[in-house]
Each structure stands twice: as C-alpha cells, then as structure tokens.
Length: 174
Image (cartoon, rainbow, N blue to C red; front, side):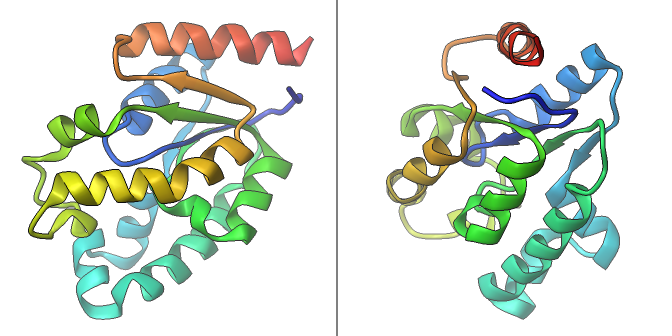
C-alpha cells in the first residue's frame, strides 16, 4: 500500500461510496467530494439529463475532466462515479494521486440498494439486475487492478467499513 494525502473510493453504484466517503471525511477531518455531484453542480443538471442529451460518451468526457480537477486537490476524500475506472486516464490519476479503496458488493445487494432509484441512467433497462451483474463482471477487474484496498460493503455497516479503511490507511501511512 502507498502513502497518500487523498483517499478515493471506487465501486459500482449502490456500493456505498458516498455514504462511506462522507463518514470517512468526517473522521479524518478532510473535505469530501463526490465526482458525480461535482459534475451536476458544474452543469446545473443531473446525470440522467447529461446521459439523455450527450449519451454515455459525453458524460464520460465530463467525468474525465472532473476527475482530473478533483485529483489535483490535496487532502481529500472523493467518491467516484461507478464507471470512472473505465477510462485508463482516470485509473492512472486515481492510482498516482491517492489511496484507492474498492467498495465491493455482490450484485444481489447492489440491486436491492438501487432498484427504487430512478436517477441511475444505466439501470433504465428492462432487467436492471442483469445489467448490474454485467457491469460488475465488466468493471470488477478494473476496480481490483486500481485498488490499494478492497472492502466488502455487502454485510458491514458503514461505520465498520470506515473503521476498516481507517486502519488500513493509517497502516499505509506509517
């Protein structure tokens, strides 16, 4: 594991990146950023609207620019969008500039957590559970290759996930 002033959380939608990120930032007394929220604030519209008008490629272009900007800030906790790791440039920036934590969760639990959320454009399909399984199969190798630490958020409470991350992070800093 490496030393870093920054902690970046990666994982699929519903894995707990934003919830854990906020708690982690509070515990470390660091600012918290959510790359998707930062994109929404910058554009003045939600992610679904960006997908509708610009498609996934347009959104990924915006995401790449935001990741580049946010990873320049020192001493932060950042939750990335679930697909941020799809672009090699994003993976490289995250790995070079921070301690990357993959919040892993199985497809069934992710489906349960996201099934009532209408703000997930990638799940606006006939079989959202099958889509989650496909996304997990596609992205998990990238999450694992980018991560300094993997934490299963499927069974643990958010505060326990934070404790686990803090222990590993503090160990890496020594």
